[in-house]
Image (tube, rainbow, N blue to C red):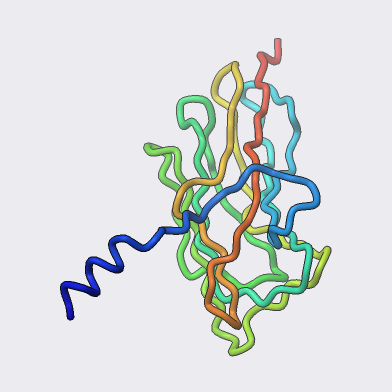
Length: 169
């Protein structure tokens, strides 16, 4: 019986979650979108914001967020969070890997209510651009948004933010 279960589970299709291409009018309930200047100067400090919105009312139970960037072109000095959301249970900037990890775990029994059309800032990054070129910020693999009622991972869409960095001279 155990062997049959293992064989059955290994043959079950695995539903891949994570960022989907940004599509208008899709039935993907959650969107992760960037707010930032599309152009910046080398050496200037700027704010880059990752916002989460929803097309329908959703009760969020947890968010595991992975943000990737090129550490050769940008330094992330600080990550701030929305006072209207819960405080993260864990957050870390790995400048060597070009990765920011933020984990939110909602302790309220009914989760965090996110109303249709409303949004929260999951992360506000204070960045400093180190060199000329195009800097890309993206959502990394492992990012999850978990619904409270069903404990299901919600599909979401996102696209990369590309910032053109030029010399200030």
